[in-house]
Image (cartoon, rainbow, N blue to C red; front, side, top):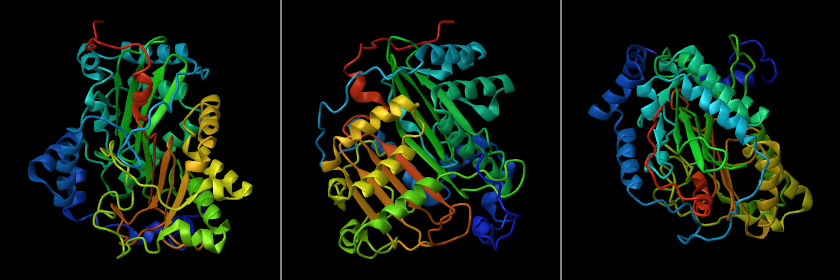
Length: 430
């Protein structure tokens, strides 16, 4: 996967993160080395360390009490943006793969893996390494056949290139665990999967696959698929040693975003650049926070109001608009090809209401943030400071990305209101 990495050295750009490897003797990494994911999460919830993450967790729980509405630009949901449609998704193949996975589970696992399609727990995914919401099964706690069946299910759902990206994120997470001697908490299989509704070719259902730096919420209705919200990150974003050396993700989004910003006219650049610094004194309170940094629409932010900023895509040249589509295609990579194209066709209809904004400088080596936002899609890209690594300033080897479908599109919510209602609380009956 990816190009072969150069020889391991901190002097190479690909290995710049090695200058920021942490001291493994500090308590955090000693605890990660000794505790498994369940113990690590219980200790965190009981003792509240680190305090800033614990405070964020409590805030998330408060946000969860709000009924789902969806991300909006002004607090008002625009109706009628999403339609039921035939996207040619191989739903029978997907249901068969789901059934094969479920058939390998114990009765206890079968009960714990299913939730009602409208259960608010769908919204409790999160991207830190802390297992804050333990739903379904966790892949590092199950048998090898169950893991293989889970990955076979993902492979049946995602595009080949989207599946490769997801596997890359999982492998990089495992590599991070090795770097910090914390593989009991951070590893290639430290991900949970659960179902919302019963896998069906005719009725709405979905699943959540989530863990550190990879969270996918996937909804189906007949031959239609929604993958939103999703989060994908990496710290570092490349593996430069070991069996998966050369694995790299999120670099295309980075390259295309910078290319777009550099290709704008000086006037357009000035209007798109809403803040010159990554942590700008001009930012209002809360615009930067310790966890999400510049991100606005991460975990538990299902009802966030995000005003439009920057410049419209319709004001760009045709070549620049093609770059926007190239960026969005990377963000829609998890979707099968036909679904991806249908999403892009919908997005193009709203170019007059699609905004591009930027934070930070835009030289070749500068870290940055950008957002593309319209009534039907919102994507964010952010270079982060270190969480496991020690870099205090944002760096290009720590990347967070996410996608939302505003105005109720997340979790297939807007489509669920059009499809057949699912009234019962689904319980596995064998």
